[in-house]
Amino acid sequence: MLNKLSNTIYYLSNQDDKDRPTLGLVCGDQYSLVIDSGNSTQHAKDFLQEIEKLNVPPVKYVVLTHAHWDHFLGMNEFDATVIVNSQTNEMIKEWRSYSYDDRSLQNYVDNNQMSAMCMKIIQTDMPNRNSFKMKSPDVIFDNTLTIDLGNKICILERIKSTHTNDSTIIYIPDENVVFLGDSAYGTTTNSLFHYKQSLLLPMIKDIQKHDAEMFLLGHESICDRNEMNIYWKELTAASQVVKSTSLENALELFKVDNNRDPNDNEFFFIKAFVNDHIIQSQ
Figure 1: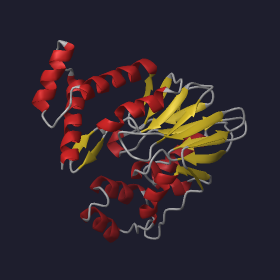
Figure 2: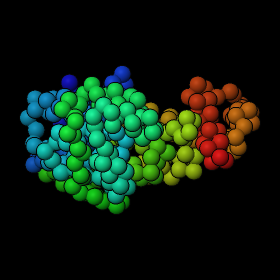
Figure 3: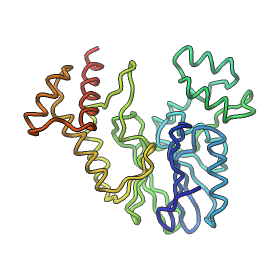
C-alpha cells in the first residue's frame, strides 16, 4: 500500500526483512516520476501494481539515487526513461555484465562481488532470470538536472555523501520535500561500518541548502525537519570528538565537551567515526 505524503507525492515504505528500500512517486499534471526502482523485479512489480490503483499521470521517468543493488535491480520493469548521474552509470555497468543463473550468482558471492543477501533476493524475487540482463540508463547527468512533470518541478542533484560517491537526491521545491535515498547513512569497508568523516559537513551543507520540511530516506521511510536536525546534531557532535583511532580518547573528549556521556546514537556514531580513522590508516 502506498503512503500519501501530499496530493502529488507518495511512497512505498521500506521493508527491512526483505532488504527493500523506500520507493517514491512524484506526480505532475502531465507525468509522474519514480524514485528508485526496487531491489528486484518483484519489488518493482509490487510498486507498479500500487501505482495503477491511483489516478495519476503515466510514469515517464525513473531516477536512481545510487548504484546499490537494492535500489536499481527492478529497473527493467519500468517502461520509462531511467535517469542516473555519471558515476552511478559507471557503477551499474558492472551489473549489466553479470549473468543471473544460480552458478554465476554463487561465483559473484564467492568473489565478494555480491552479498549473500543479494543473491537470496534475486533467487526469490527474480524468476526467469537465466536470460536476465540489466538494461542501460537512458539519461546521464553530471551534477544537476531539473525535470518538469507539468506544474511540478523536481531538482536532481548529485551531492557529497558519507554513504557512496554517487549519491543523487531529489528535491521537490513547491512541496518542501527531499528524497535522500541512502545518502545520509554510513557504509561498510573491510567489514567495518563507518561514516566518511571528511564528507560529513559537506554533505549536510549540500542537503540543508534545500528548504525541506520532510525527508524521505531509503531505510527509515520518512523524517521531519526536527528529526533530521537531531540526527545532524548527534552526528556532528560525535564527529567533533573523533581525532584518532582511539575510541577511549573520543569518549573522554565527548564527556569533556558536553558534560555528559554520549547517548546510544552518539556512541554508535563515535564508534563509526573511529572506524573511519582505522580504515584511513590502513
